[in-house]
Length: 260
Image (cartoon, rainbow, N blue to C red):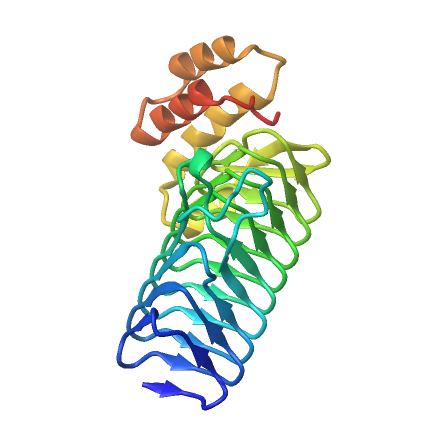
């Protein structure tokens, strides 16, 4: 274990034997950090309140504040959690808060995500795997981001929004409704504009499946159909693969409405 002499580690912290901690970092409270994780200088992890669990091979860079109490007026020092998986990169001055009791109690980050500088993740957000978020993007509470999402810089996302897998969000967007999976969305307020064909192709989707998903998204985005009419068109025009069924289920379960 390599811990700089100026780092402050409370007695309640549990560290794997090979965790590296740089100068002037502070780790306090009920924090557990697994093997291979690197913590650069000036990082703050934990607080007097919540529980922070961090997996393997993560990298936290200077100024990040991880596992602080939620910015929620209803929070009264409850023992809520932040759970971070493996192989994530948290860049400079990003902040990730613990959850709230009313929001389920846990903020969670999956595996192999990257949060660039000055990103804020509020209480009770849920991130899947392989998510990349560019600089200064801000997530309000209770946002759900599914696998392989890409989000540009300086995006603002309101509470309870859901972003479907393989979605691509253009920089500077403002989001207040659910973003369709496999779509490209941008604008203020953001709307789905096209299918993310490049992202799907890079991920190994076949040409036929990319075109199948493209037809499904067009049924929702184009033509001024109601959601029920769009679903009917998808069922009539598309091959009912697992990805098409996922799109249908995503749309049916949306509580915020679909950004289109």
